[in-house]
Image 1: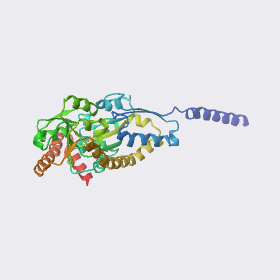
Image 2: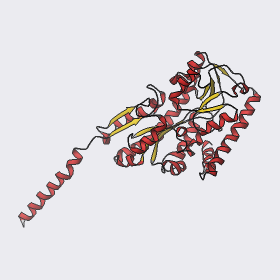
Image 3: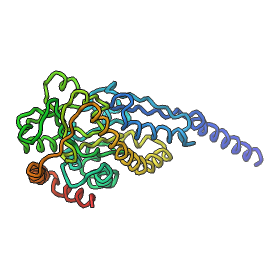
Image 4: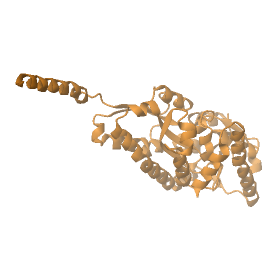
Length: 341
């Protein structure tokens, strides 16, 4: 009987050693991150770098390794959704405006609605697009991705390479747009929208392929657009832009529960801190633009009335267009407006 017990103990010990082996020799977690922002851009500084630092401090992520590829080193901005879905990238910057055929509902936060700062739009969108939200269920889940972080930039302004004083002067100008919402905006003021990713803007503007851009003040200096520009509106809202960082659901499920929990917990914190910092930076960004010689103009009362009327039509047309395609455009628009309050 004693021999049988001893053998049983030896067998259990052997099983314990064998099952513990893989845990002791656990392969380090490697996360490949990609975006299109130039080195030194403020968005990775406020989102990606804090994420990496916090994960490195987590005992459960001991030995975690990051490969970060900025400036479209792993592909074009429009391809990042597909690269994430295929597993070639773990975490990537996905702008709904660049993939509006795949994520049309997400463009809701880019509409020229009644908000002035980054955080108001960011938090309204975040609550709909983070896991469990309306847009998450309608759009992110069907695309097989999960939103980790987001930011809605401050309202966009019209910025041109030649002087203008009124909306009439802008008519017929070829203005760069990003996504269906801003395309509608430009058509309303009789400008010609030209869709293109942000990294292509500087060259197109310098060659005269386009006459101007819809851009926030925060993004002019990082791409040197202010050095090619002469005039910009100020205090208007011609729409905005959403920058998302996503991970595929398949890759998410391979992460240890402790890492999943930390990423989920830090999402809200990083989203709030990033938008607050962007708002804080905007005054300094406006000053850089002025020092570069860009003339900031305030539209006349008459032009402001034209803009207000046109912008109110954009949101309605955007929602109705999606409704006709079987997408819940009006439902999402109403939910986003409610979130702004």
